Image (cartoon, rainbow, N blue to C red; front, side, top):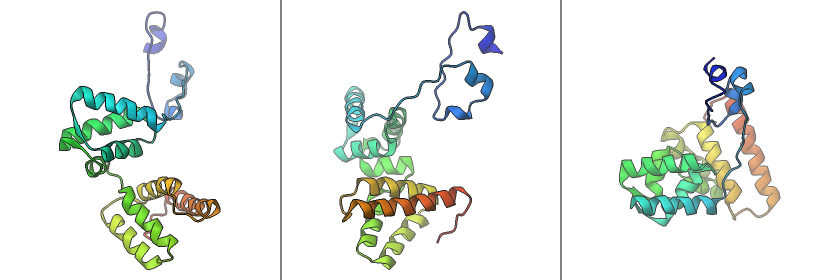
Length: 182
């Protein structure tokens, strides 16, 4: 194997999101270093540096969208930034969500608000709109969960946790193969 043969003179650096997907012989020859998610403030500082250096056109809501979609992963944030700039020229919220192909958090927030107001049919109508745009259920649940974690409209933390519990059950069932619209 190349890694073993040249280990005296060469160092290899592998970057991946899930080290468990590397085969065991490679894992055994590597020192696995795990990084935590970056705080939003750190990501914002770095994104501003890049945008200024590259003289990109942006709006403040574009920063928020990049940070939201990246979930603490700076590589993902920079890739999204570059792709949005290349595709649209301006970094704004709508363009970022188009490039990242994630359901818009504001739409998902509207769904949750309708649920909290006990307007179930309206909530279903809202989710149908998002679902009909072609997003898969896992993307919907991931965005829904992240929005719920940051919303202030919940009457109590217990209610928020109950909503998050139900969302996690839906995600688990979806990952097991249940893709019904219901």
